[in-house]
Length: 464
Image 1: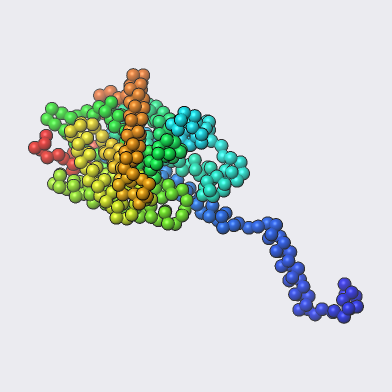
Image 2: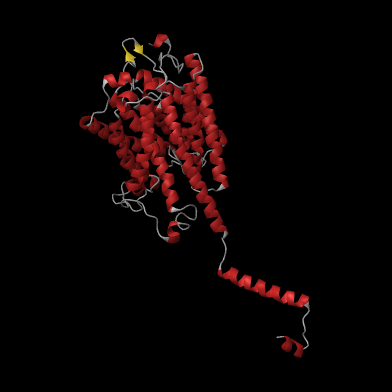
């Protein structure tokens, strides 16, 4: 090489050699980079979106801790183990049944009976390669992320039922109901909107499930509470006897856990990490919950003459349920209005259902999830910023889900009552389900002297 360069009098110095080597290295790297291209902007957004959806999934999962603590706190200490057992079981049953049949009932792709029923087969299996990854949902999340996010929602509907039937239902009977309700009833109902069914084609709108999750669970709770009947000593010849919960601190912790989880519940329902919609949903969700507290505080203080903690806890949840149907199509002002009205509604609903209709709901689940779920769904037709949303379509959806869920829940509870029995014996109920069903106590070193205390919710004496 040196002889060749000498012949043409091109003897390079050190600088020339360095320059030549640099050009060779840069050229080789450029060729390699073209062959092995790095992550694109689309790849980066896919990762961000998918990560947010997974974060939202575990926030929804945390809500089950909130349900467990709210329910156990608002009921008596002697039933705490039973309630915690049910809440752990519901999550597990919901996840497994959703993997077996639920996901493919809710998202069948092609419907086999009009736009009312479809089934894509048993089990879950991600499409191979990019079809199950970046190509699965317009680059927002993978097939597996879609499943786990939706599976977390599925168990929530049955958890709502748990609170309304607490302190007197047989554990085995409740678990059978939960299995069928989550696996079949909730998923078929969900397919009508989220699976592209007939209500979706009609234009019905339910962003994150005021009706699909909360009202469906609430209808099941109402039917279960009616068929079971009230707890012993709830309604006497002298009138209604309040049965306070054993731990308002537990109930308060549970409310805050649910509020936290709702950011995943609503925020994840954007189905991407798009900053605009996600941040708007966070704001509307927060303001509605806060307004729900204020609405419940004002009304309960006027009615009961004293501020009632249990009512403002349900007021927060009422605001959250109310905004869930339209969190992405509301302004901050309308979210406050929706939450405030939900907080007012929940107080009157608890009084009417408990005192006048005489349906015993220990935690107010029917009022929070069913009544405020209906309100939130109808509110979309009143306040939505999308002109395509209208009140009549929303009303049709509410009625359709109500009729379907009531019929299914009624059949399930009556069949279980005939075949297995539905309610524990009077002796078990008096002693507590912890001992009767589980043979253990949640507080073995604590002896409860009196059941007085707890909620200050006492109806005026003149009303009986």
